[in-house]
Amino acid sequence: MLSLAALLLACQPTDPLGALEACQDQACRTAALAPAWLDDPQGTRTWLAGLDDPTVQATLIEGLALEHPADAAALCRALPEGAHARTRCERRVVRPHLDGGGKKIQAEPSRAAGAPGQGPAPGPRSTTLPLLELEPPPWREAAASTLQAALEGCDAGDPLLCGRLVSREHAVLGHWEQAGKACLAGDPDAGSAYAECLFQAAEVLAESRGAQGLGPAMKLCSWSSYGPMCVAHVLTLVGPNAPPAQEVDQADVQAALLVVEAIREVSQGQPALQQSWVDRYWSSWTYTAYDQAGAVDGRLAGLLPPQAQPHLPVAMAANLLQDRDPASLDLEALATELEQAQATGQEQTPGARGVSHRSRALVTNHRIQTWASDRKQEYDIPAAWVMGPGRRAVADDPAADLRICVLEAAAQLREPPPASFFLGVVGDPRQHRLVRWTGARIGGYLDPEQAVALQDPDPLVQQALSHPRKNAKARGQGHGKRPPPNPGPSHQAPQPGE
Image 1 (spheres, rainbow, N blue to C red):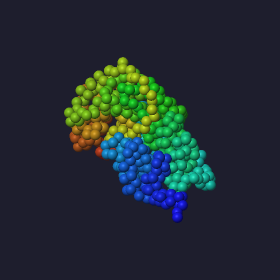
Image 2 (cartoon, one colour):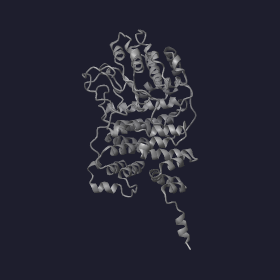
Image 3 (cartoon, rainbow, N blue to C red):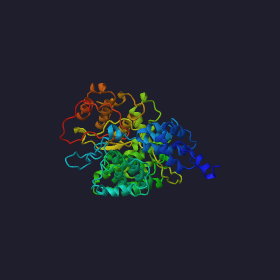
Image 4 (cartoon, one colour):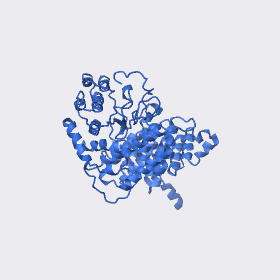
């Protein structure tokens, strides 16, 4: 007769999927999920799709998708179509830097005001984020035996996977140097897997440690060959997500300012980089606040610091354009509406509300990229980040700047207006030259043939008309693949279709 222990043992599932299905708690499910996926992807996907708790479902799927980037799309599709969790999963796990066999991304030198040999205009001079200037990481000189010891206890069977798993465990605890060593232990040749491991560890540091984790996270990013995109993800994940604009209070602003202070601390001695990172952070923060807002008003202008102010009008414009008919947009009417919205809401005071550290989608609605880097004639144009990953011109005339914001926000609609909406400002002497240049740049992107047939007396605007940017979709972050190095004002004139 079989003993009770033998009977119990015989009842235990022997296949990985069976072990996963037998789990009664989240820790067990997390541990059993990857082996089940590797053994039976379809069965595991069916099990995931059948989970009753949407929060548990989304957490498990997103974690597994990050461990298996090649399967990320299939995993995210296990979540209900149209659900916020599915959208977030698809955005959170997007890794365009891994396309093309792991092509490395290098940061361009910063081209902020005062950079040697550059024009005087402030703001980012490309959508490629700059990196910290650092010495090689301490673990690069570690002995082989030390590296092997870094992965002790991992039974995943794959050194690359062990490196990612162990590095994340260290990152959650804030042990960033141990995380980096684990990444190198998983890929001792310091190849693309090492770079991606550093990237993922930086994300975990930012999301789990908040502002305290920003400095170490940015170091890991700067040591990764995927650095610019890594920096963009960290700047999006590092702080509490902005609430709807009408609900923002001083506690929310203070939480954001802690992130800004952490950026300034880690970027000491690199003022151009510091300015770019802080501006990029406020660009995403303000866009998120107004993207969720039920109505648009200007009360945030009285709460946010000066460096956040240039990002408010384009975020407000993006909200105003929601649910509008793209074919019937009127630039002047929208600019007037935006100006009126800025003047309202200053007296509103939100109720008390605690700040929570909420994850956010990594990709905004910035769908097309029409100003990834400067052409020769554009170095003197003041620039600002727009809606997260893009750039826009900044006009010194407030009325003209509002029109630029409307044009830029309209370009990012799911169904943008016809090119004629943007090109309608070309040749109009009443419009500021940067309004006309913005219209020519976006309109030329949408309809090159229509643009090249137009004329404008300003050489800057005419150049945008005569040589439209290529009509290629943005990679979601605005920096997924590095543009060709831009040698400075002395480089050759851009060619048609650039």
